[in-house]
Amino acid sequence: MSNNIFAGFVILACLASASGCMLFSHNPECHEPTQPEAWFPISGSEFVPWSTHIPNGNVEPIGICSRGLAPGGSDLAMLTFDRVARPVVGWVHSDVAVKKFGGTGWLDLPNVTIADPDGILVDSQNRVLAYGHSSSQPDTIPENSTIYLKRFDGASWVGVDGGASGSVMDIANRTAIPNVAINANGDPVVAWTRPVGGDWAIFALQWDGSQWSELAGSGSGAGISGPTGTRSNPTIATCADGSLVVAWTQIVSQGANSVACTYLRAYSGGAWIEVGGSATGNGVSGDCGDGDWSPKVMCGSDNVPLAASPKGIPGTSAGPVRVRRFNGSGWDQIGGALAKTPTGSAIDVYTEAVDFALDRDNNPVVTWVATTGDIYLRRWDGTKWAEVNGSASGGGITNSDAGSWGPALAISNEMICVLWAGQDPSFCANDGCDTDFVPTSRILMRCSHY
Image (cartoon, rainbow, N blue to C red):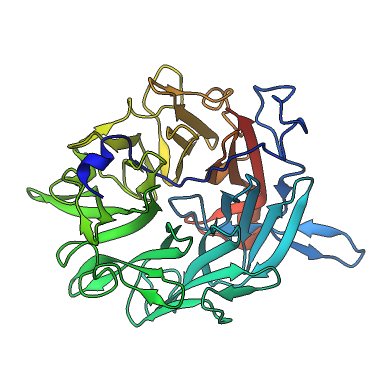
């Protein structure tokens, strides 16, 4: 992939679009819903994430204490669309519960066991995949980690190699959370972070139909990113022409200080290349300012990558959220910083609670949790960051006093959907959650036409 191929549009986000009529639309003929301004549930899309049976036969929800992860929602709520534009949802307590919308109702897939699940996606044959990692020290920097990727074959969850464990690799050293994309052949590609000497580097392997293989040294040596520097939060996407794009957080020295910037490389023509200075200096970020953390990369049907990330320090209230695209020689910010109010004023967002996706026109859509606890969403309409049916006014999509967390965003050709974890503060007292964890009572989803 040469730079001039990117003269269009590039975004860090996940694309989940499909053609055809949305079979779960309000109207069975897929006309506009009766109230097009509303964000509506899909056939009872309020899920009790974990339950216990009590002696009289009733079922009571149990609170879940869950740590949020970025990008793509949290380790509790995961969302994608399948190849016929039906949503697939997942959430976590000890196993991963997965439901797939069947056109008239939700179908239960068997629970999948992954110690630390990180996401779900759908391959080119419409099979659901779940991925994650395990660690001997799950609440610290992992050591002796194993990366897992499992695929539902219609009857059970198995590894892509047919094995029961789903292990991609055992890494006898620290490794960070993996990210997965589906390549042009319909096979998964996994990106992750692990230390090299005293630094951290970005690596990737792809499934070639029979084994996990490297792409121009992506799985050995210093990997994709090179030998020097501290990196984290890899994110990967596939472009329509088959090129792969990987972005990550890079710690860059600026005088006496260090700041987090977004770096990016594309795999094209058998090599990992920069795109408009995307892996030197301040990379995609330009002005790294207070730091660009937890980026997400996307690449649409126009073969142009985009990068999006919130400003600020992970685990804190921060803002604003910025999205950048390649202009043929460098990276431009799309519009201004995303805001809660229509006036474009600055917002407070939680850096672990932002997700990005591309719509049918390759325009970026961003959803986030503000410090008010509500979830907001804006879509770039070509000239401005616009609301979608009231998604950035008042209480936004959620409009809840209880609080929300970990939004996961997915988009089809007709619908934008957001899945999130609804909070219940009383659960923390019952379950002893510390301040790093989110007390959760239910998983909810709302969708809107656009």
